[in-house]
Length: 261
Image 1 (cartoon, helix red, strand yellow):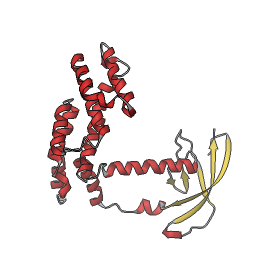
Image 2: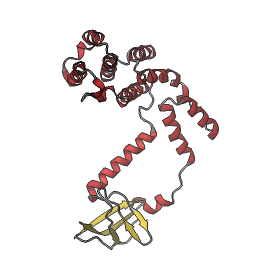
Image 3: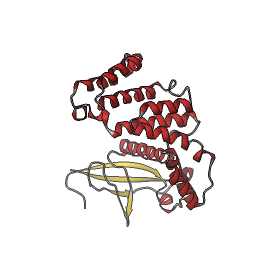
Image 4: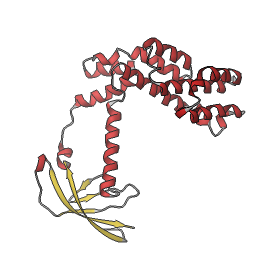
């Protein structure tokens, strides 16, 4: 039963492997690799080692070569001990921060923010004059101005700029530094899981562009229901053409009857 309202008919050509995807088998080893890449990327060494032991996977060269070096750097950033993180990064790769100015700027401003958090305004000003002067022009200026504005608030953590003192802000910088270290070591900067999510996001966006508000297909008995991005409206798809085997997948021609409230 369709919702009351204007009924719009569209002919939609859907090229999919719907049946094949539903019945396809997923390789367990591929799933394990995705999980392991996430654990290694985020420096969960003990969990990664336990996972390898439990699943019987072979330990790859990438798995633990640099975790012991990356994990302390990540941890220091998350704890707000930025200067120590910079020191360890320079020991690991002397040219890394100089070739990643955005990451270096984020680290320096994070240290400035931590000085403000500790009420060391004099130390924050001295640090800014010494270390942040090269960033007083160009694309970093606006962020720098936001950081300097923290000095004007008696309680920065309740100010409009409170996000600069949040754990989320620390984590975003720690993640950016971690990716820079991985790239420097010729390792993937993103996990397989992140790539999969990115691919899904792109597919959803393309489906939204091509099919309007429809983004996911689900077969229920002899009907197809399509959830909508902005609500729970359902539409029925009626097949109006024969199956085609072009390029190894079916091309289905549907008459789309979409109810618009």
